[in-house]
Length: 193
Image (cartoon, rainbow, N blue to C red; front, side, top):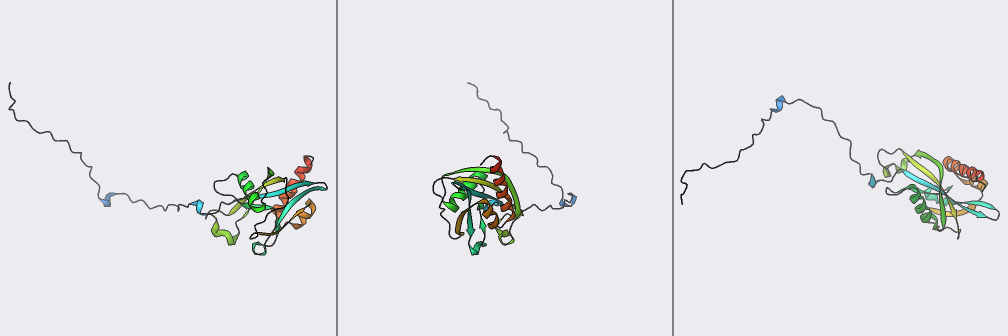
């Protein structure tokens, strides 16, 4: 058998050539554009809330439940209100707030075609995202069945009462709350309730 005695040349892999980097003096000058700060909105309250008017039918007519805010929270009458969580739908927020503020679980919740915006309160500015200037509020109606005695969170509300529409309109403080209840009452009348 013949042996190859021819010297072989080792094969070396080709090395890629690196393009020459131009001198910094030859690069065009581009002004730096500041990027907007990245805001983790989950650290803040969502600028959305719900207003729910609980309603019950009685032998002498329909009544709305109003809750009285404590002195520390403003000292006024209102429906059930509260903020939306980031992972909630409007309806889920309305149902949760109703349970949290009243304990009512046997309800039929209906969206009302009424919403509005109001400015973020100055004293709560730090609680909302920096770009939020208004809070959007959607309105719901909750037909209450069973027990009509709410279980209040005493840190927020100190009294409650079922009232007829006319009395509710004299007790409510905020124009948007009044407008929402007026809209609901007119809608119920149109639908024969």
